[in-house]
Image 1: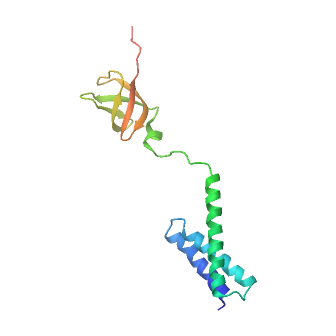
Image 2 (image 1 turned 135 degrees about the vertical axis):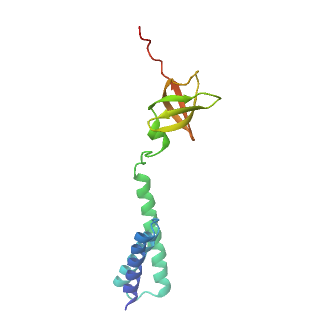
Image 3 (image 1 turned 180 degrees about the vertical axis):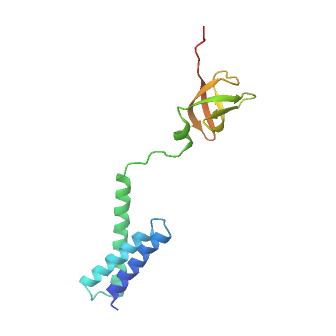
Length: 145
């Protein structure tokens, strides 16, 4: 087996290992090894030291390309974060003793704080999330009559 084919096979093994151990780092070593194998196919007389340098340079180029592409990708929305799940939702205060409020939002109970006076049974809206607490504002309900 020629050194070029060994490099290509090693690269394919590393790229395949990325599927088993995801982490987005083995793929770049795999691409570097495959690229080195292709260079060796074009120039089969390279020394071992030159081959290692080709691998280092090509792998570095792949990593620089990946980082450049990552910077161009738009940032993902904050899905499945407490803020995205409860901001703007309405709830009912179920406990108003002490500085923290207990509020039911949907089928979950949350600890929260409010700037204005809030009593048990008041309807509130979630303004935001601070760690594990929600910031609340009481909703003024119109009086019947």
